[in-house]
Image (cartoon, rainbow, N blue to C red; front, side):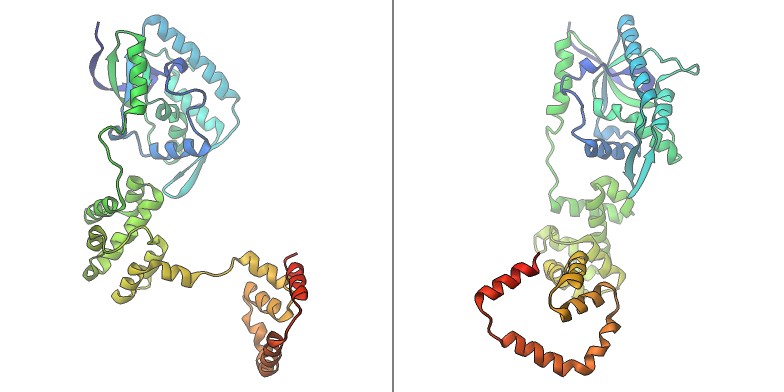
Length: 349
C-alpha cells in the first residue's frame, strides 16, 4: 500500500488531536522558551495563514479516537488547575489573558455544549507548535473582539505505515525552507516600496516583515516618497546607500520636522555621524556624578542637568573669571603620580 493524499480541506479544529507520541521531531517542550512561544502566538493573532503552512492530518480509527478523547480529558484537568496568565504583543500593545480565559477558549474548541470532550477523528502529523497555541490565541482574539479560529487548512493523507507518517513529520521541519532564499536588505527595501505604493501602512508592514523591520521599512519608504528627488530606494537597490545603518527613529524625526532634502541626503550618506552627535552619558551616570563626584563644581553642574534646573547655575556667571582662572591654574598644576592614582581610585569607589 502506498501513501495517499486525499485532498486539502478545511477541517474543524475539534476533530483534530495531536497525540504527544506523534510529534517525533520534538523532545519535551516544543517551544525553545517563553519568548519563542509568545512570538509565534503573536503571529497567529490575525488568523491562520495557509501560505505559511498547512496542518497534516490522518484519519483515526475508533479506538484511536477514544484514546485521543482520554488525552483531552487529561489536558482539561491540567488547564482547570492552571493559574498563570499569558500575554502577547499585538500591534505594539501588550494583551494579557488569564488562565480562566484560556480554559474557556479550550472548552469552546474541544468540548460540546454539556462540557464533555469531543472525540477526535483525525490525528496530527505536523504543525504541532502552531496548533498547540490556539487556546491562548483564541483567548486573545476574543479580547480583541475577533472571532475564534475554528477551522484549519489541512492536508489529509493516509499512510501505509507509521514510519512514513513519522517521515512526513520530520520532513516538515527539516525541509520547509527547501527552494527558498532569505531576503537581503535590498530585497526587503524593494518589496516594501511596492507595498507602500499599494497603500501598505506601518501596521501592515509590521505584520509582513515583523515589528522592528516593518517600522524601519515603512519610515524609509515614507522618506523616499517625501523626497522623491533623492531616489532613496533606488540608490539603496543600486548599492549607493546602505540600509543597515539607518535608524527608524532618525528617519521619523526627519519626516516630522520637515527636513530639507540636503539634510536628509547628508543623514542617508552618513547615519552614524548623527548617532555620534546625539550621544550623551546615561542619566544614572550623571546622577551619580551629581551626588558623588569629588570636584564640587562638576557635581553642581551635573545636579543642575539631572534636575533640569540650569538656571541654578546663573550665580556662577558673575564669578566666571575667578572660576575659570582657578580651574585653569588647577589643571596646570603638577601632581605627584601616586597622588593622581590615589585620587582616581577614590573617585571610582
